[in-house]
Image 1: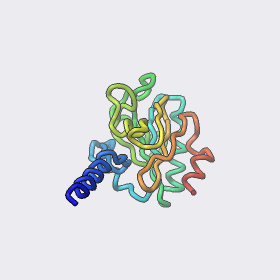
Image 2 (image 1 turned 180 degrees about the vertical axis):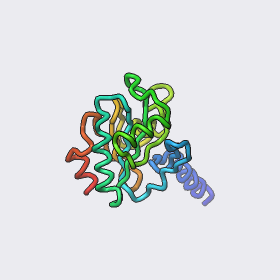
Image 3 (image 1 turned 90 degrees about the horizontal axis):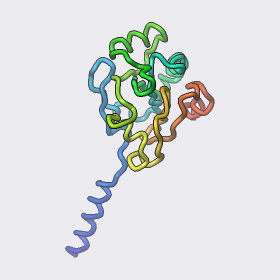
Image 4 (image 1 turned 120 degrees about the vertical axis):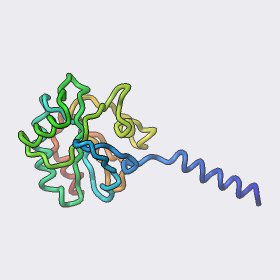
Length: 178
C-alpha cells in the first residue's frame, strides 16, 4: 500500500512539474510601468501583438483599434508590446510610444512597456509564445513588427498570425466571433 501511495504521489508531482504554463501565469508591466496580471483577462480572447511606431506595418494600429472598438466589450482584448527588435523601428521611450499611439491612432487598447520579443533578452511571455515546449502548441519566431498571437478564453495559444496579415483579416475576425 505504501508503494502505491508513493507512486501515486510521484505521478502527481511529475504532472505538476510538466504541466504547460498558461498565458494567465504571466505578469507584465503596462506602458505606465504598473504591474499587469494577465490572469485578469481570464474568459476573454486575446490578441497579443508586438508593435513599432516607425514601421511599414504601423498603420495596423488603426485596424487594431477598430477591432477593439467593435469587439472589446464582447469578451475580446488586445495587448500591444512595443519592441525595438527590427530595424530599430521603435526607438522611443514608453511615454513617447504612448503619446504617438494616442495622438496618431487613438489607441485605447492595453499597451505594455517596451520589451524584447527575440534574442538573448527575449521577454518571458514571448519565450512562452514562441516555444512549443512551453506553450504546448507551436514553435515560432517573431519575424517582424506586428506579428500576432491569438490566445483563447482559457489562456491557451491558438495560433500565430504573420506580421503582414492585417488585424481585420477574416481569419482573425472569424476567430474573434467564433
